[in-house]
Image (cartoon, rainbow, N blue to C red; front, side):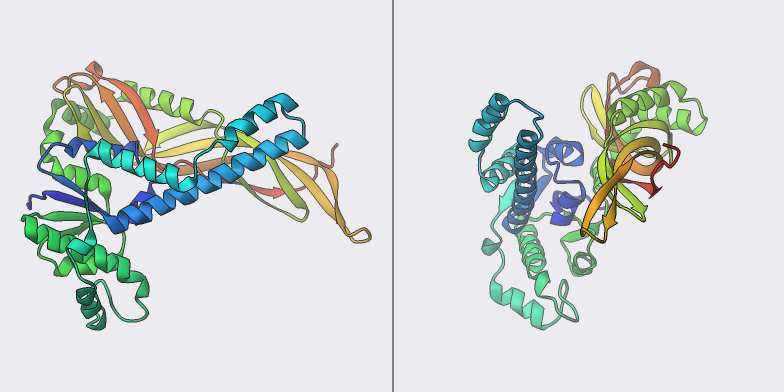
Amino acid sequence: MKEYSAILVDTSIYDNFGLKLEQGYFASLKQFKNTPIVYLIPDVIASEVTSHIEEKVKTTQNSLEKALKDSEVHKCLDQDSCQQIGVLFAKKKSPIDIATSQFDTYCDLVGATRIDCDDHVSISSVLKQYFAKKPPFGKGKKKNEFPDAIILMATEAWAKENDKQVIAIAKDGDWKNFCETSENIDYSEELPEVFQLLKQNNAQYPYFKSLFEALEENQADDFLSEIETHLSMQLEGVAPDQMADSFLYWEAGGCNGWMTEFSLTSNKITVIDVEENSAIFELSASIDIEVEGEFSLYAYDTIDGDHVHVGGVISVAEHTFESKLLVTVDGDLNAGIEELCIEHVEIVNSVSSVDFGFLEPDYSE
């Protein structure tokens, strides 16, 4: 098995996990700080990720500003409160400043090594690769692959200069094709699997062995009950986007959900991070929720040319989604599962929307 000494993460992976840099998988990369394993961030990726964070900040700020204006119109808050919030909001930082600060703070947290691609690859060598249609370029229009080519060629040159073997994490066929021809970069599509690759010995802790055996033998009821408690608390009041069909025009009026059941879809345990008295590992789960949603219904008036309110309806929907769970445990990893307690459970891919089916007025009313 190859020994990797550097990690490269594609921008799409950051996006895939919601750009949550200081929690979950990305926060766990701090385990490699002050170790021989280098967390590599080329300037092109830094610019892309910062830009994507900036867009999220803009969207959030616009939503807050709209909510503040709506609260004034609908008298949700008194005038003094609205003015005080407005004063605070006026002092907000620009999206680019927030994004840059957030990314710089993250790089310090994990001890990332940032490199300038210009120092390792020339535009002429990139163009030579482009006209030769070599990976990551290929047939067809490949102008969008120029950033990827710069990143990968610069990383390869850096790896050769520093005698490093890099594991690159992406979900991109062009990255894969490039890595297949590279002597210094290998390809993976799963960030959690890379943690396992880099820290193979973690799975040998007695805790993980006893947990796996308990799950296999259906004797982990207390452990699963603790997981269920954490999930129930996190999903209490969950409010996903409301989706529905109707012959009428409808508007969502808010929703409230709760968990009804969960189960593991696999007994596989993927170790993410291990410290002296704590560990983070990944499980796969299926989660059932119920959500109660409110809707206002409107009929189109062909005479006046507007929509007329014809009532409201409350609908309850059941929804199942699958997600990875990041479980943090605290205690002696040389002990059995009964000796450790679960500190935190993070739902990696939480529910984003729920379909309430077909809506129609409650004619009984």
